[in-house]
Image (cartoon, rainbow, N blue to C red; front, side):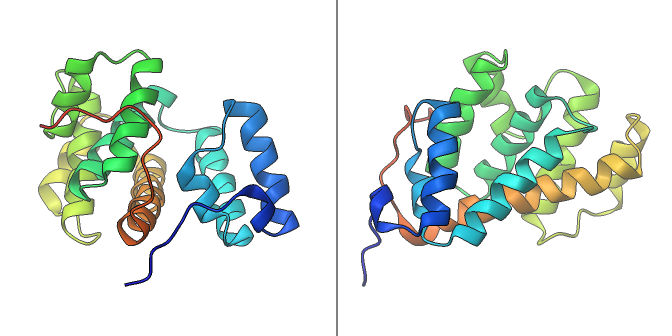
Length: 179
């Protein structure tokens, strides 16, 4: 089987190099997953623009988006994204115990719990959440805008999960605890 390696920035197109330079300025490093997605500058650009768009005028706070990222990455068993998003979730105010609780599919705060359960159901069921998870989501106070954004977040995180699943590149974040 072909081994996929993390490319050096210079191995990528000018467009990907430019995008990754912006990532490096913002994050202080170029995560291996981003560099690998950079094999396709259009995929890298699309992913980052989608993340930025979903953060702007969002139904979910940055902290809530990290909870969604964690549960989707758990469903998809993506060690890379679990490592990265556990680190980011802690930066957003979650404790280690919180991240583990989220990854087990629940959270003590009811509204966020409904979003986590819906994201988990969507990821587990190939997009079809089921009426119970949807009903709980709307009963928790979310609206149609939030449903569409949550679905987009699940799809976006699934993309990065799938890239890792198919490349198995080295994880360059502290490993997440097993649940």
